[in-house]
Figure 1 (cartoon, each protein chain N blue to C red):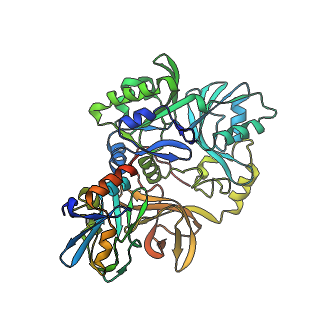
Figure 2 (tube, chains in turn brown, green):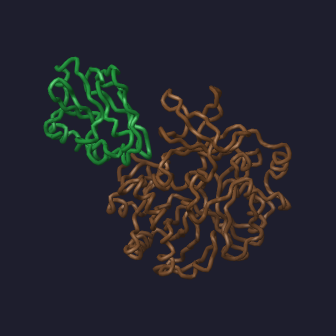
Figure 3 (cartoon, one colour):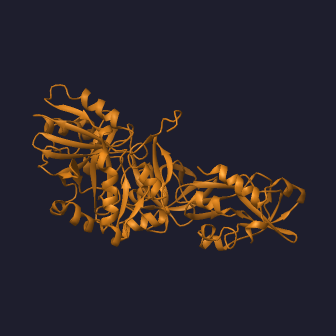
Length: 371
Length: 128
């Protein structure tokens, strides 16, 4: 490795090279953007099964008598009600109307929880947890550097699940099991970022390459393929999943992101609850809104117009391989109707677009119902 | 087109002369770097092209790529087949994936471009 580079490599780097991955610098991590091609990998996940290296994701463990109470306080969604083996997608509110991160909380046991956080925010989340833990009897450990992670995604992932982790078949979406794999303690959850069924394994670095090869072997007759970040992004956007740092951040609230369903106002208390109550009562002025277009490829940062007036800026946008048209989303004023014609400015040209319901693609098993 | 008879730019376009006109496209290396091409923002017929200035944009799933004119000239025809099937650039970069035809204004500008062998060597320095 060169001394000049600060790019981090995952423990699957050699594997990516072996399978012909095209490696790029992704927020300081060297990861494959694609292997054979984004469209092929995208469709493989929609129709069969694909493997993703998601080792850049972070793991924060929260243990102790007050672990459940603490996590319920820092999350918008209901963590308190989780039973052993259950998980929940949620936002971490920043108390100022924005979001620290979007995460999945897992209850491993009565007093043991695992929080899967985003790569670029794991240090920030850890600090945020520690700062807000006064008065709670908890031990918070950021173990993001100790674990690698693989996502197995697609309708045929169930066949791999049957052979590799049959106990997970009895669990619904967001279920989690702890399991010895190749002599190491691992966490396997029925989660993903594609809208398809699938599972993710959090494992120590020492075995991760062998686990990858095991999945390749188990999936051989199913048409398994290694997949890169390119298809990961097109799959999640089709399914309406948010990308932290693009679609949500410290400036936008869960209601504005159209993810009000993760905010449980019935909970006794959580960070910024009064702000959410106020926003719910007074209403919001802007909302994450979907667009689609038949001609032209929109990108994040492009502006959306209606009758010459700027409505907003796209936070995510791409070509949708499943729908064979372009899709995108961005914060726009309320009152736009599905099907309404708008325009997206692409290189000084205003191209026709339509306000479109999110999720854009509803063929997957697991997409969130927004609202 | 026979790729060995084409001239190449450092920005990975090719130009092939047939009589008075020149075909323009992108190299096999360029299409492999761009990935799945899903849209070509074709130039307009009659557009004036300037050497090393953008003449059109090719979009893959992941990103948009500027295509630069190898020489000065005027666009006299565009490959409209790319509107329905932009992936032709991926499949046949030197054949049905051509982008436009151009009337060249100054043939001496071709001399500054690379021949196939030189371009092949150049690509080796570009790949990691």
